[in-house]
Image 1 (cartoon, rainbow, N blue to C red):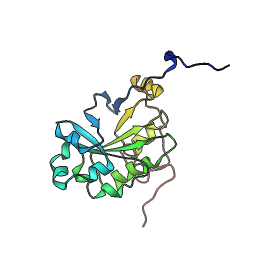
Image 2: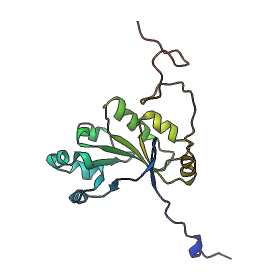
Image 3: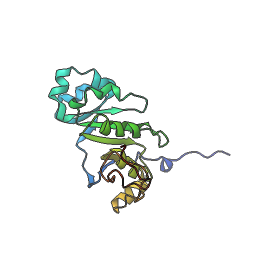
Image 4: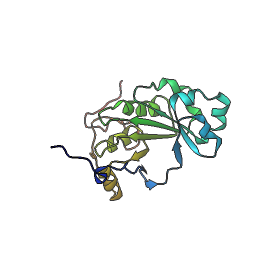
Length: 185
């Protein structure tokens, strides 16, 4: 005997809230599929190809309200020479088990010196947040119920000590790690 699904069993799309280390805030950015969204005054996050297809002058004129989202399989090198035309880089986490965007965040900060916003989008979970902060993320689109509840209580979690350096603040100076990092003489 099979059971039929009822309307009450239908799961609603989870609410997505924007969180930064300063707390929850209203999201002034919209996700759009095409550059036509730039016709208004909105801050727009475009897919990689739509961003690359923009005229260079249009990218320069819209710098303050232009962002791009990179999927895990898309190469950071595609935007490396265009970072000055971006205020935000969103890195996708379509599944919690896909960690390629961690590396991209760290490279954006350390290798490319990107000072704009780096946003985590997608499957952001409780245990990931402290690690994401350490590699350079500073904004998070959160839909995970457990993480939302913890952040509302001010609980970020994570470990208070680390055995490796980090790309962002919070990392101690060279020579202060537990594994005694020393300068080469």
